[in-house]
Amino acid sequence: MPKILVVDDEPNIRELAKMYLEREGFHVETVGCGKEALSAMSDNHDMVILDLMLPDIDGFEVLETVREISNVPVIMLTARGEEDDRVRGLELGADDYITKPFSPRELVARVKALLRRAEPPGEAAKPIEVGRLRLDPASYRVTRAGKPIPLSTLEFRLLYFLASRPNKVFSRDQLLDTVWGSERFVTPRSVDVYVRRLREKIEADSENPVYLKTVRGAGYLFETRAT
Image (cartoon, rainbow, N blue to C red; front, top):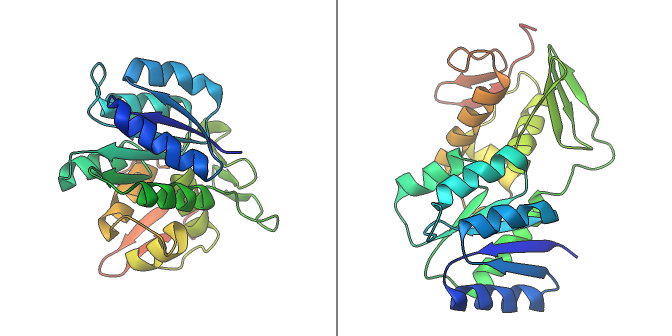
């Protein structure tokens, strides 16, 4: 039974989310502030639903700290609808976002969709080694020269998808359809955010990438010819 942590300072929202998610068979824990959220993260949750407007620690700061210790899928729950806030959340490692006020049924649908996308690849998926990089789909683990690189679930899925199809260009829409799926709730700009995050993590120089290349007007590819 997936375990979900709901972080929101509004009791009615916590209870509403808890009620609808538990109806679908999820185990739900709720907390009302950032400090409680970070303390609860030791309980091995399968997903975090995180409000950005918290009374003690800003939700962005909570998200950043979560990403330092876990690749658990995170849905931002926020009254901030501005694109800059959404992009900032994605840049810090959020996997999806919902703007308040929201439909509880939509929240459940988002949770289910994100958990499906977070499932590891099938048994046929094999580790990939390119240069100093190694990608292990069984553990969602990436290492560079033997040192682990922490990635969120969707960051790994995007990287593995491209690396398993080397030197082939994929458009943003193709990546959204394949990695995020038909139930995606993100925009083509989100792909740019994720690629930028991946470059910062796997490339020695993110401004001059060796692996993740941009093909102007076409999309992105994972380059192996130079390795």
